[in-house]
Amino acid sequence: MAQFQKNQSLLRHIFYSRLTLVLLVVVFMFMASGTWGVYQKASLAREQRERFEQELIQLQVRHADLEAKLNALTTERGIEEEIRERYSVAKKGESVVVIVDTPLAGQETNASRSTISVWWDKFSGLFKKD
Image 1 (tube, rainbow, N blue to C red):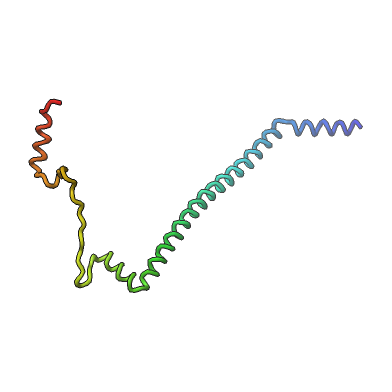
Image 2: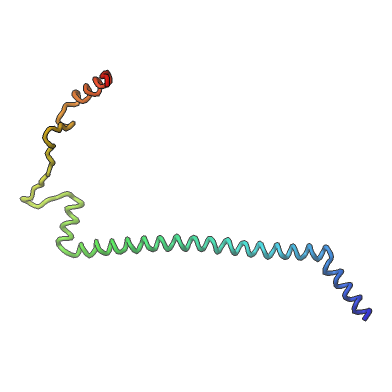
């Protein structure tokens, strides 16, 4: 029994020594740094995945838009619309109609007044008393 207690005392002395505690702290720090590195990589991978998913959605929308434009170009009307949009051309005999709103009675537009008149009104407005 005395030998057992002596061995117990020796083991306690070894396990509770400062050297053992320092070694355990070093091992813990080494494992913690490895875990922290893995956490940072996982976080970065998660952020990249979210960004790439957003890019994928944008590309899918663009693909659908391009597909619709391509389908429109398979018809003669679609080709004609694209040519008119890009090159501002018209067929023979076509004309452009411009619709302009008429000003209401009693309202004077700045376009109908001369530039000098507008400036004079602003200049003379500086000297008027309210």
